[in-house]
Length: 308
Image 1 (tube, rainbow, N blue to C red):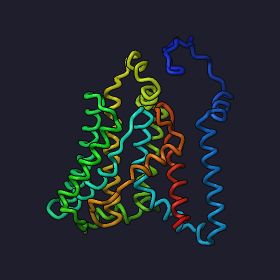
Image 2: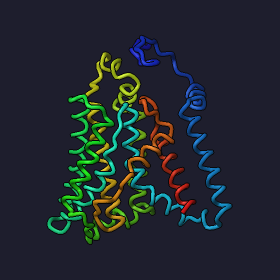
Image 3: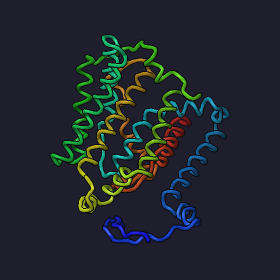
Image 4: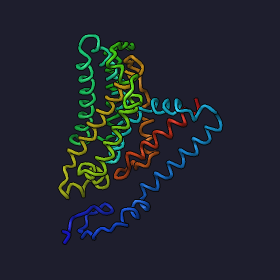
């Protein structure tokens, strides 16, 4: 006999007895779920956009152009995956663009004085540190996420300018440049990385306790706390993930251009957030999917490609 369990329903905890599953239930629930219907709508928008641009230009439907679109959106896509988790949890991170710039500058400078492994590791640690600072300020000090990350946006961008003297620095290490110019599984490396991260994040958010907990705290943090969830730790973790993803995006961006530039990725946070929101994630938290975000990224990338 199934045991009763506490479940978060409409932002309130209710004691429910799970019913016996049926073979038809999963399909019926999937077709009627808001997430599925929103995804179908986004696919429809993308299809209409593709048809319109294909009529406008005979070169649009080429395989090379599609790979070009995926390559161009890879940095935004990588960061948007983590941003989805942040926003689902009820947070927001505006500092990602500055982290991209600082990590690019760091790996460029260190690649000339240390091994590329040390340079990459240091760049990733920078992202984790900035994310940790954001998390502590928001969860421990109680500063609003918008104000906190707007502050770190300015500080981190300033550090990138100071450490680089405002100048771009080239990167010549071939192993590192593979991140932005090589092939993995027949795809551009950065595209393969984006897709692998999307698959992993989608599974985590859908099939793990961590993912379900993120949805719970985004829907109602107080109820989640009463249910015994470690709300503060969970909220801190999403900012660390965001910082790490931004650092990875910075590495990919630097590998694509072959340089670390302190002025790079200005305004990328707006593109990232736009893709996440377009993909169906609610700014109030508790709702959103990784695949919806990926569709949002593709729509923006396709539109940008068609207009240039």
